[in-house]
Image (cartoon, rainbow, N blue to C red; front, side, top):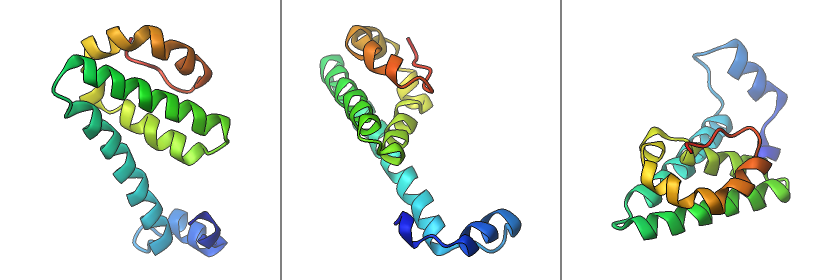
Amino acid sequence: MFKAITPRDLFYKTADKHHESVIIRDLIDHFNKISFWVAKEICFCASLKQRVIILKRFVYIAFMCLEWKNFNTCLEIVGGLMMSSVQRLKKTWKVGKTATAPFFKRISFVEPAF
């Protein structure tokens, strides 16, 4: 997807708010779709235990994406983790704190809820 972006697409995105590149709009839509999916998967879990397991898994996946230099996917996941619906799950973050803290330290641009 990134290879399909031309300098013209970037120029029009910044210079003309009414003209939007289809490929940039698709990238934005994909980013939002993944972020909302991450938040939905965490919030729709019935039990606290299951939410903590899913939270840990997403934090680890984001960490691995950062290690593999897949910054877009890392930020998509982090965007989902930082949504207000996920941030309000104080018990989930409190229980998952010990397991996720080392990974959040590595992802220094993220401010976790705990």
